[in-house]
Length: 133
Image (tube, rainbow, N blue to C red):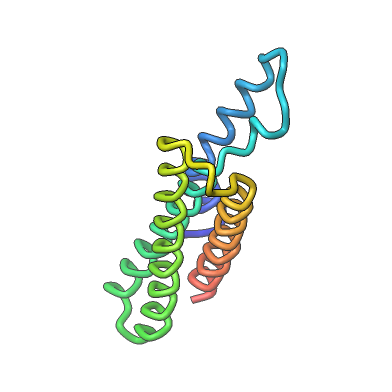
């Protein structure tokens, strides 16, 4: 997969909830910046990016047996990131459904955005490495 296809098919599709939220907020009277940042949308974008990493690396592994170590190491990092994103998603759902006051909403938002940013950078790195080979 080249960088353009990755950007169009993976990043844009994964970011659709964010894009739709921005579009809807254009039409609302009373909006705030806090309405734009929904941490669950960022977690889903991060999950989409990491699942794409695993899929791309596995398809390359089937086609080329020479660089298996590189591909397996990168896939493990994506799995590791998916675990953190899944835990974060579970905590976000618990916080939303149970309305727990012991969890900090700001910390959950920051964690979600940082994990998403890491996933975006890591996925871009993997796509660039795949393009080189």
